[in-house]
Amino acid sequence: MSRGHAITSAVPPAVPTLPQAGIRSLADLLAPVSVEEFYKEYLGRKPLHIRGAADKFAAIMSWPSLTSILNQSGVWSPATLQLMMDTAVVPPPDYCRPGRNREGQQGLVSDLAKVRSWLRRGASLVLNNIDSLTPGLRHLAAVLANETGGATQINLYCSWRAHPAFAVHFDTHDVFALHIEGRKGWRIYQRYFEAPINHPTFKNLDRAFHEQHKGAVSQHVDMQPGDLLYIPRGYYHDAIALDRNSMHLALAVIPVIGMDLITALFESAVTDPFFRQGIPHPVMAGEADFDLRFDALLNRLVELGREPSFRKKFRDFLAAHSGSFVEIALPEDGMG
Image (cartoon, rainbow, N blue to C red; front, top):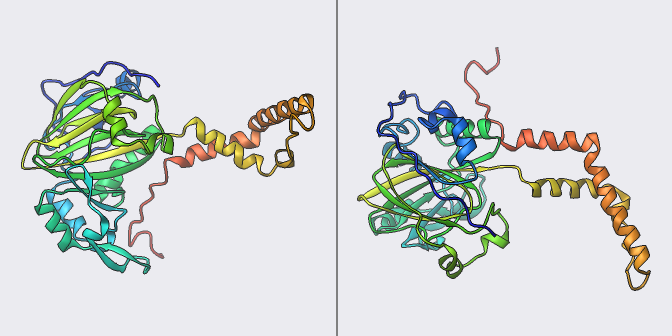
C-alpha cells in the first residue's frame, strides 16, 4: 500500500472552442494540456482537472441524445441500467419487470415507467457500457483505445441536486470524467492502494474500510460543462450535483497488466506435461527432491516465457486488447 503524489490542477484561463465535429484525438480531449505533458506528469500518477468550453463535448452527449437512447427500452437490463438513491443501490425488482431481452431470453428488463418514477424521486441514473450506442460515443471509445492501447468502457451518470449517487470510493481503472450538463462538485482524497485491479482483494472492501482509509480531501473540483477530470485508479473520490440536474460520462481505460502475463503463462503451461506432474512432498520425498522440482518448474516457466511463439502470442493479445472499431457503411459495403 502506498499513498500517491500531491494532486495538481491545470485550469487555464480560457480554452478555444473545439469544432462541433467533436473529439478527434487524445490531444483534442486533453487540450490545452499536451499529450506529452499528460503522459509525463499525470498518467497513473495524479489527478488532473482541465477547464473546457461549454460545448466541448456537445457532439458526444446531450439531454436529447440521452433521452433518445434511454427510450430504446430493449437495450436496458439490470446490468446496463442501474439506479442509485442517496448512495444506496435500488434493487432491480423495484424498477424492472419480467420480460425477454434482445436475445429472447427470459429475465428482468427495465420498466421505463418505474425508472421515471424513481428519477422523479431523486434517484441517480447509471447507464453502463454505452460505448456503441451513438456515433459520438463509438468515436470517443475508439480514440481512447487507439491512443492508449487500453480497453475502454463508457458509463453515463445523471444525478440531481443534493442526491449523491455513490459513497466515497476508488476505482480499479483510470477514469476520464467528461462533464456534459449542469454542475457537480467532486472531492478528491488521497490514494490508499497503488494500482488496484478488478479482483476481490480490492472490489469487496466495505464502506467502513473506505471511510477509514480515504484520508483528507486533497482537492475540491467544481465540474462544469466541457470540463475534464482525470483520476488514476486508487484515488478516493465522491461527487454531488450542485445544480438541479447534472450529467457526465466516465471513460474507463483498462491497460494490460502483469497479471495478464501470468494468466497467459498459466494457459500455456496447461499444455506442457511437466507442469501437470505432481510436486514431491518435502516430508515424504525429502527436501532435496522438493527443491529440485521446485527450481525446475521455475526455470521451465522462464523458458516458456522466453519462447518466441509465446512472446508473439502475447504481443497479439496486446494488439487485440483495445478492441476493434470497424463500422459498416451501407449501401457501399453491400454487394456490388
